[in-house]
Length: 195
Ligand code: GTP
Ligand code: MG
Image (cartoon, rainbow, N blue to C red; front, side, top):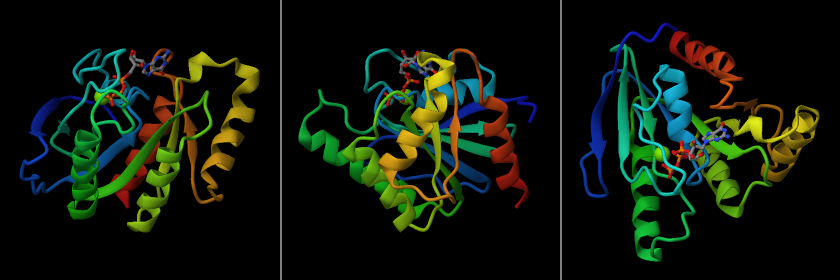
């Protein structure tokens, strides 16, 4: 899809009322620092429209990006960020759950997992929870540039096994540096928009 316009339209904090949008929403979930905001920038063809940081815990709100007045990308705060208190973690968890449960326009949830590492307990819980809510999660294996090309298949298998994901779950490798995988992710999104 040719991205003509992007607009950070709504920013929701822990106690905000969530927007009732009239266009489809696509959400990006995953651990802090896994690359959610970087992926959103790559898909939007913008260098730094969504704020990113080497420090985990950058995105602390639910951000709705209006793309071409056609759909929304929903950037979620990351889970599992060690430096915040249990109380704050719980509040973020509740906020993310509230969004994923209540949105009427949410059509697709990408769950991002670093291709280098075994999925964590939090990743597995998130995967299970998305399924439980009736969505078919699509996994994006991020930071593909950080492993040797010859290791790719092995790592993709490791993610599938670690999540106990069956053949219905797609796992798409992606690098925000090389943009490898970006077109395949867009194809997925376009498929959802047409369905
Ligand atoms: P939170 O907002 O804290 O939840 O993090 P996030 O998931 O939005 O991650 P973000 O996009 O801010 O990226 C975190 C760090 O990882 C930044 O330093 C990015 O530059 C880096 N990063 C993201 N994607 C990639 C990638 O594909 N390859 C490499 N090498 N670095 C990446
Ligand atoms: Mg972020």
